Amino acid sequence: MNVEIKGFGLAQADKCVTNQDLMKIVETSDEWIKERTGIEQRYFSTTENTSDLGVRASLLAIEDSGIDSKLIDLIIVATITPDAMMPSTASLIQAKLGLNNQKCLAFDVNAACSGFLIALQNAQAMIQSGFAHNALVVGAETLSKILNFEDRTTCILFGDGAGAVLLSQSARNKTIGHYSRSEGDLEGVLTTDSLMLNPDFKSNLSQSNYLHMKGQAVFRFAVKAMEDAITEICRNEKISLDEIDWIVPHQANKRIIQHVATKLNIDINKFYINLNDYGNTSSASIPIALADMKNKELLRKNQRIIMVGFGAGLTWASTYFVV
Ligand code: UT7
Image (cartoon, rainbow, N blue to C red; front, side, top):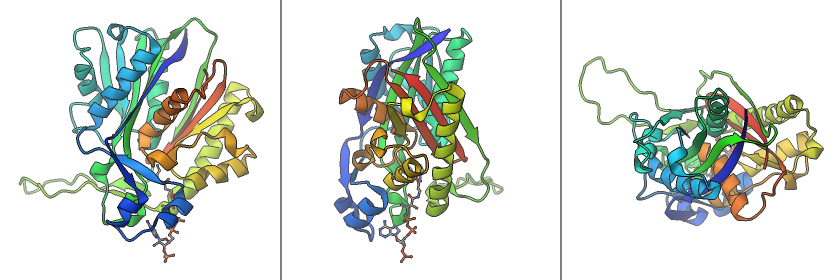
């Protein structure tokens, strides 16, 4: 059974925060951030939690697909900043979309910045197995909740937002394929604080959950992982890089993308980049980029696209699809 991405949507968080705004909080400069990352601004959410951003992106993806929302029978949300440990953000989105009274399964996936592609891979498998017919696949984050605004090496990188796609059965020929890998990391390259055991059985209200990162180690991993994911998806799908119209990468750092372009000898203009506007929104970055492209009328029927991501875990993944 073939599947196809039929709708795209994105939700911006409410507060646009420029590099100049961050200069009032940490010792940094607009020049440093732009030169080292390419980021000019990001959006932080002051009112909506992850599920609210996910709902807004989902509604747009559903509308774009033209599919009756009552036919959605699977919701997978990729996030590392859920509204709560439980219930899943997908369950909250199901309820907020009014999809409770039907045969529908909702659950979250945590594969950090690769999460959206791995959620998509799961949704495809569940549709192809006959379990589901129409899947909402969402990447949604409120990373501002876990940023340490005293750590200039991380707080300038990230943003909040959500992107969603509607994946459905299709009458067209095979239009989608995936590659994904992980390598467990005990070195703390990209982590949040651990949830501590509580041997005294006392309430621990002071536990923090900040993000920590060894930037240069992540940089080196990212270049290698993206190179591998792009090369392997081309091999799996028996397609050459020349035949690809767009590469939609995880939006972490423009210099990472430039390195990959140089190593694989790909024209940098084939990479869709919007991290200058959004910063790094982790699992939301790829679906936001896709919806952004759709809104700018850059996605055309039959174009061949590779999406590629990497993140904590460590994880990395790529998806090939035909628009
Ligand atoms: O979704 C995955 C998420 N993570 C990533 O993709 C991160 C990958 N890594 C990176 O993007 C880069 O490593 C960073 C952007 C995080 C850092 O860039 P870098 O070129 O690797 O900088 P660095 O860590 O080598 O630091 C260079 C200098 C240091 O000062 P000294 O020791 O040379 O005096 C830092 O203290 O830049 C300093 N620095 C800053 N200066 C101004 C670090 N952060 C800042 C800052 N503003 N925000």
